[in-house]
Length: 424
Image (cartoon, rainbow, N blue to C red; front, side, top):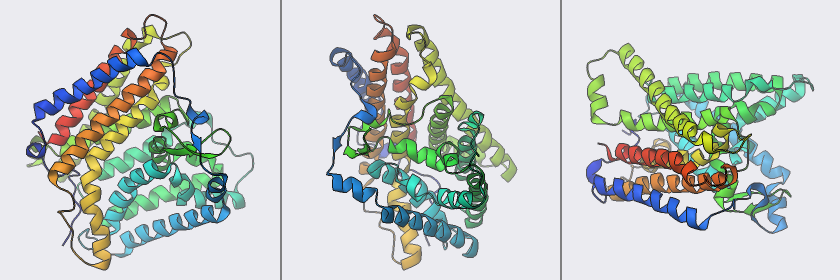
C-alpha cells in the first residue's frame, strides 16, 4: 500500500549530475557573474509593477471577470474543502488507505504553488473560507466592521506556523484525523473572523491565501493598472501587493521552514531522534523549527543592517527588499517538494481509482537538476529584483558597495540550499 512520503525529497548526494563541490562553486559563480553584469547594464530601475504587461484580447479579460467563472471557482473550492475534511474525518485513520492526507499536503499545499505560479492569485477566488465567511458577513456582519491595523499579518503567521508545525514536527502528521482536526479548527476560526470583519480579513490573516498570493506575484499572468489581464515579466509582479515588516516575517517563516524540512532529511537528524520518546521528539522538532526560522531571519536582518547606512533617507530597509526574497522562497519550495508532487501526488488518485505509482516518470538525475536549477534560478531572480530596487533606494556613489551584504546573503542561502537537497 502507498504511504505518505514524509521525507519530501528523493535521492541524495550521489544523485547529483555533477560533484557537490562543483555544484556549489558553479551556483556561487552564477550569482556573482549576474551581480557584475547587472552593475554594468542595469543602472536605473526597470521594473514597473502594475504598469507593465502586454494586454491580452479584451474578451479574455471579460471572460476571466465573468460571474459564472467566479462562482465556478467558489463551488470548486467548497467541494474540495468538503471532500478533504469529510474524507479525513470519516475514512480510515491510515494514510495508506485514506487519500485525504495526500490531498491536503500534496495536492493543496504543493499543487497550490504550481497553480499560483501558472495562473496568478486564483486561490483568492476559490478560497472556501473566504466564500463562507463573506456569505455569513453579508447576513450577520456590520457594515462598519474593519480589521484593526495593529493586527497586520499576525494571524497569517500563526496559522502558517501551526500548519508547518503539523507537517514538519508532529510525529503523526500523516494521520487523517490530525489533518481533519487542523482543517476544522483552522476553518472555524477564519470563517468566524470573516463573518465578523468581512472579506478584507482574508487579505492579511489567512495564512494560505497570503502565502499563495506571494507565490502568485511570480506568475506571468497578471493585471495592469487599467484592470486588463496581461502577460508580464514575472519580476514586475513582485512589486504588486502589500509590503511591511509583517509580510517580511511571513516570507522568512516560509524560507526557514523549508530549510528545516531539508535538515530533517539529513542522516544525523534521524540519528538524533532515534532513542527519544514521542514528547522529546516533539520538543526537539519544535525547537529545531523555531531555531532554523530564527537563523534565517537573523541572517536577513544582518544583511539589511549592513545595507542600511547606504540607503537614502526615509527608506524603510526591511520591507523595501522583502519582495526580493519571494523568488528564493519559491525556488526552495520547488526544490524540496518537486519529487513529493510527482510521486506522492499519484497516491491521491491511486487510492480512489486504483493502479500503481509510477516511480519511473522522472529520474533521480532529473529531480536533482530541477532542485539545483530551482534554488539557483530563484536566487538569480532575487539578485535581479534586489538590484533593481537598490539602484532606486541606495545613495549615489554607493550602489555597488551597498549591495554586497545582500549578495553575500543570497550566496550563503544558495549554498546551504544545495547542501540540503544533496542529502549531505
